[in-house]
Length: 612
Image (cartoon, rainbow, N blue to C red; front, side, top):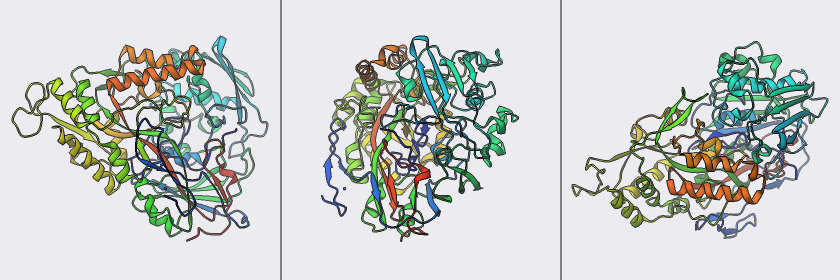
């Protein structure tokens, strides 16, 4: 079945095709109720290797009665406790909030199905020649125009690669995956004027030669880029200046259903319907997006200020589940929360575009210490007390949404404080002075500094609960900066390998490509733990190897990688997430199912303003 990209882009998943850092656990969802008033039932969650949290069963689609009005304005809440950065370029943005904003005016050229695999139904089709390590991208519609009326050309597809590969490009999309394109490394190094592996065949066709073509190509991996850029608008702007340019910050040209009309920095965006949209002019006239704090979104939806939200805090579910003006939809999130340990540094000067360097002397570079930290966490108690069963204990680094590759026999790190204590004893972390807190192997005070993101009061309560868990096994965990950290500052510190961070609580949106290379590879700047070993690189490469075209082989390769990551305990999966989507009842039809999600241009309203 054809996948239609829906309006509800999660903060983690907002791109659905590329990676994005997630916000705090209570303020992001792109990652989810006893008989309920809508007839849904509570079911025991049995798909996550043993979690006992009860997970609500909610619909993924709603249809409301009433005749659709002509046009109208959809009011959309961007749920964040920080101003958005406003980097409105798929090639340059770095967080999920900007991706949410971009989603309404996407420049995506491919469409994917319910398994997140490329179909032939988008602006462009993809032909793969695996034997010769080549792919061909063909624009298959004659009437595709940019929002300024200029026609889409194959040069617009090629120019996106030239931006990412440019020597002056400082964004995060140039990585080992991108270097799979022949000639990308030489172009990046400035020793070539073009990317030799990218060849224009004709006005609608481009051929890309790669060092390898793996199963990941169908999930938009292997260096394949899913977006075009308006070369006619950007070509005269130096690549190093793009991120601060008006074309990126104030007046981006789009292929999507909507175009930017007005913008207030960090606060709001008004979109107008794109009359040139290749699927037809949208049924809405406008969309108005405004920043709303996570603590206020429930009340804002209850009072009818907004029709939808980019995400909804799971800890506020009880406050909206019975409201008569809303329908609560849900879907599994392409995301997971995790606890990461800092084991090294990012060396921007290493390799072609930087490498992760593991430090054997890092404080947390003791596998038994890391395992003990994991076993000491009572995650299931947190999911039951704070998340109304809308999250469950994660048992692996592959979310259940990837049904073919998620292995539900994995058990992960269950709560076992006695095992945690035994591991610490074995590793030489003893309570030398009898104060209940363990010293390090040298008998010196051991203080572990953890960074977490600020959000609601619940965030603080959860972190304090875990700190008590760790104290119960003798570990002194203190917060970096003494408090939880605002979203943007948090990721600035994590990315910069701040020496005040020993471990950190965060979340990943996986996008639609399950391959973990982009998050855990040696050349991945997203590998925030900075953990690299030859064994890990071999396991990652095997997942995306030619042999892995066979689904059973690839599933086995995923399993081996997940077992290795469990043994090493450098990234501890904490929650699998369910995205809940409150929708005002003036929205006529809305579907959030990945295989058939409502497209932006299809949205209609049955009233002039949201129902209160």
